[in-house]
Image (cartoon, rainbow, N blue to C red; front, side, top):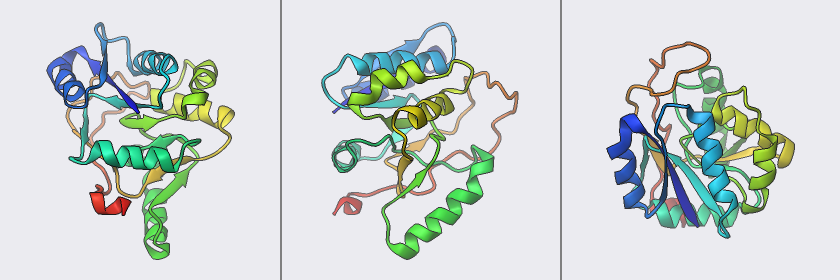
Length: 201
């Protein structure tokens, strides 16, 4: 398992500390070219690795047990696109669905839910054997998370797996991305729930 951190020049120190703490490769957006290009660069790096990789943005806040728990989830779903963050606030049109699915997961004692789209670029992991195809299928006119999700529907032809309890939280500071929809990100963007080691027992 390898990790690549995507950093923005405005959060350079934050990105460097995160990458150092996880022994991760760091890709910096030095000129503000945007998240989509940075995620493509990260996935291109992943395509050259022999191990499965995790892509993480610089505002991710990994839990203390992130590394062993991430390994556990990747072993459990070797052929799936995994999002290790499930967040509140954004995208707003998905929040009611997420709440409903989390309630159902609680009732059925499930540890994950499956959604048809990658909703967040904060922390995710594609199967190693699908990264090249994912890159080829990614549209260039979508936000980064949706671009990866759209490509996954073509390549993987299955839903995205979200642990009910996220392995990272989100440092909900000012956005550095110029969003295509022009909307300010004023909602609280934090993990719905956070995991502990007991969740892998």
